[in-house]
Image 1 (spheres, rainbow, N blue to C red):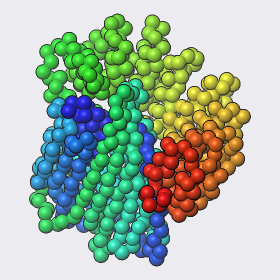
Image 2 (cartoon, rainbow, N blue to C red; image 1 turned 30 degrees about the horizontal axis):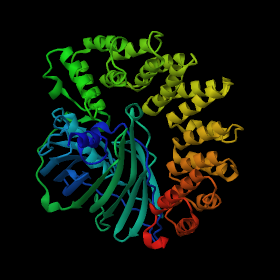
Image 3 (cartoon, rainbow, N blue to C red; image 1 turned 180 degrees about the horizontal axis):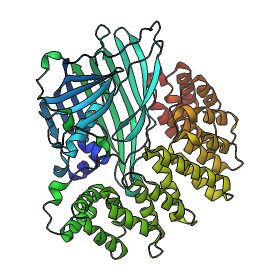
Image 4 (cartoon, helix red, strand yellow; image 1 turned 180 degrees about the vertical axis):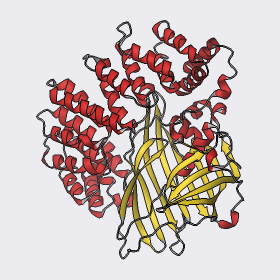
Length: 592
C-alpha cells in the first residue's frame, strides 16, 4: 500500500495530498471542445447583495488501483460586503466526510469542518481570492483550494460562445477554455490547457500527464447567482522511473441547495490572511517536532530516500521544515553536500534548501553556484534552487546572469533559471530587467549552443515579449534552432504563439521540425480550420512520429473534418502502435 500512496502525492484534484506534492507537474493531453450556440445574446452576471446566503453540496473522489480518497460536504456562503463588482464572502463546511485511504498518515489533512474561510467573487462568478485565519494548517488550506479550483468558471460576454481566462491549480498555471453549450438553461463547458511547468519533476524521474480535464456548469438564468450545478472529471497518468504507470481518476460534483445552509460564525475580515495555498509548501512540523537534534532529522531524511519506493519530496519537505525551525542547521546540511552525501540524496538536499526559503539558504546557494570545488551537477542544482527560492529578487537575478557568463553546464542552468524568475515575479521592474538582459544577450551571441540555451530561457519566462524573437527563429537555417523555438513558443501565451507556429508549419519541410511545431500547437491549445488543413498534408507522412503528432492534434479538434481524417488514416495505417493512437480519440464503432 505504501508504494501506491507515495505516488498519489503527485495527483492534482480535490484531495490535499494530490496538491501537496504536485506543484512538480507536467503538461496536458486534453484540449477544449468546440461548440457554437445560436441565438445567445444577453450578458449574464452573478448578482449579489449584502446578507445573502446559499449552500452547495460538494463531492469529490480520486481513485487509483482500487484505492480512493473521498471528500463530501456542504459549503455554506454568507455575503458580508460588496466592493464594486466584487462580493466578500464568509464561508465554512459542514457535514464533512473525509476519507484519505491513499494518503500517508503524516500527509493527511485535517477536516475543514466548521472552520471559517473567506472568498472574493466577481460578477463573472469567478473566485478571485481566498483567505484563511492563522488557525488553518497548510494541508487543509490546500485541500480547500483544490476543491475551489474545481469551481473555476466565468460567465460569457454578449454574443460570445468561446472565451478563456488564466487560472491556477495544483499542477500550476493553466488556461481555462470555456464553451457555451446551451443558452437555456445556461450551460458552460470548461477544459484546461497550457499548464506551465513548476517544480523539480525531472530531478526525481517523475512523469505526469493530464489525459483529460473537462467540467460543465449550469447557471439558473432566472437567478444567475453563482452555480446551480457542476460536474466534471480529470484523469492523470503518473509514471515513476522503473515503475508501472498509474492512472488516477478524479470525479467531482456540486449541487446548489439553499436548504442545506448552516449559520456561519461571525469572524472579522481583519483575521483573514490572503494567500495562494498552492504556493504554500506542506507543513511537517507535527513530524519534525519529535526530532531532538539535527542528526535525527538528517537520519529521517536519508531513510525516506533509501526506502524501496523513495520518498524524495517528502524528505525534502521534512528537512525544509526542520531548517525553518533551526536555521543555524543550514550550514550542517551544506557541509554534508560538500562531504559524504550520496548521489541519490544530493538533488533532494538542494530541494530542501530551496523549500526552506531561508536567507541563509539563499546565501549558501549563491556561493555554491560559483564554487569550483563542487561538481558541475551540484553547481547546476544550486543555480536551479536559487532561481526558485523565495520571492525573486534582482540580487539573485544578477548573480545568475553573472554565472551564466561562464560557459559550462552550470552556466546554462543559471540562464535557464533566471528565465523562470520572470514567470514567478510580480515585480514589473525585475521582469523588465531580466527580459532586457536576455534580449541583449541574444543579440550579442554568435554560437549556436548559446543561442539554444537563450531560446530555452526565453520560453521559461512565459512572457509575450519574446514572441517576435522566437518567431524569427522559426525561419532559421538550423533544424535544431527551429525545433527549440517551437517548444519555447508553446510556453508563451497561446494567442501570441499560435499564429507564428501555424505560419511556420505551412512552409516547413523537415519532418522533425514539423513534429515539434505540431506538438507546440497542441500544447498551446490550437483549434481552427487552418490547423486541420495543415495536418491533412502530414497525417500520412512516412515519419511515424510526425503521424502521431498530427493524430494527437487532430484528436483535440473535435470537428467532423478532423474525425474523417483520423478515420481515413486508421484504415490505411500499417503501424499498430499508431493505429492504437487513433483509437484514443475515436470510438470503435467509428473505426470499423
